[in-house]
Amino acid sequence: MDESGKPQGPQDAQESAAAPETADDGPRDGGAEPGKDAPEKEAPEKGVAGEAARGEDVPARDVRGEDVPEKAVRAEDVPEKEVRAEDVPEKVTPPPAGGRPAVTPGSVDGAANGRRGPGGGILMGKPFGVPVYVAPSWFLVAALITWVFGGQLERVLPELGAARYLVSLFFAVAFYASVLVHELAHTVAALRFKLPVRRIQLQFFGGVSEIEKESETPGREFVLAFVGPLLSLVLAGVFYGAMYLVEPGTVPGVLIAGLMISNLIVAIFNLLPGLPLDGGRMLRAVVWAVTGKPMTGTVAAAWVGRALAVAVLIGLPLLTHTGALGNERPEIGGVDSLTDALLAAILAAIIWTGAGNSLRMARLRAHLPDLRARTLTRRAVPVEPSLPLSEALRRANEAGARALVVVDGHGVPTAVVREASIVAVPEHRRPWVAVSGLAQELKEGMRVPAELAGEDLLDHLRTTPATEYLVVEDTGEIYGVLSAADVEKAFVAAMARPS
Image (cartoon, rainbow, N blue to C red; front, side, top):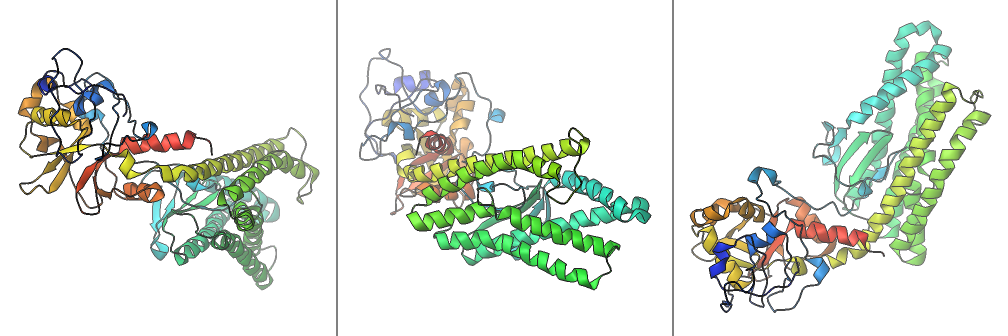
């Protein structure tokens, strides 16, 4: 937060806790020099609670008195009205920095999809230690596959009657089992390259392997992308060989033929050279290897992906109508034509959106080094657990600090006072409220090294979600408090800046 202001004396700290604050050149850890008293009505005092209550910003300085870049420290504005404790979210975490999901037919780059819920659907198991979830949208797709494949079975095996839908449901499950094998191929390769995999999710139009970090080299990126379509091709070959072991025109024969064709389509579709498909990842790796610039590879593959989206939107209905895919030519305007057009539009939208998201994520990674814990940290003062909030705010205002750290009798930090909790306490109650009642105990992971920056910083915060973190030097000395709101706002600003 960075709106300048004049430091005032301690007297007004308790009288006007809703006033904005300022920062001086004193140390962050509470060894601050008291500011000089100023006339009581010359200007409003600035402090921890005042800043949050009025939404005004204050220039933050590090312990050496150096100004922090203005746009790096502006925090979320808070309304002037009193904030109730129940209105404040318990945890604020920045959006994920990355992740490189594998793509199966229609599944998009989950790295660019933003946050997902903590569960991601129904947990089906943890192969290789990676949780596999089935999203609710899968049941919709399974029902659609059951209906469509059941209609085809009615023409091929009319003697099945209503039982054809049970066979169709089995096909839908078997098909998504093939998709899971595709995703497990990406997962195993990622684990082999020591890239963490958050989870696998089977969802609408395919599956996503949420790989949390980018490959370090273009060669690894190429291998990581190629293993998925390769496994789908292998499965298609296995089912092709199995067709010779069963009698054609029977239920096993039709199921195996359908799985062979579907896995072949999965492989071919994913090999198309455009993001967010696996082929786009492979193209990105090739351009990266030639130019030495991953950003150049991402831009090239993303624009090819957008061109591919347009081609799917226009070309798929035309191919279906001309019978080029081996089907009968439907009448223009019929139900089949509308279904084909709708499917093409959905696929095109997914590919276009995924390509755009890949571009945004690449631009973000180019700016990630600008996110540094040291420059985003708020100055803090140490306070005793039993200290009244009003007195703690007075000390913070006097030191030009914007955060409070609770320490024990030996000066060891034990908790961080949440800014939202301060705002939630009415001004007249602050002399009778101890800071310990507003503090968040320091848990493992809530101590952030001052030199942490970029994707490492975001990974650290995502691992331990909290609203505030204690920033420490290598020596263990308190440097200040890092607010997740400040990081998130800097994160959004980085997304908005052009590459």
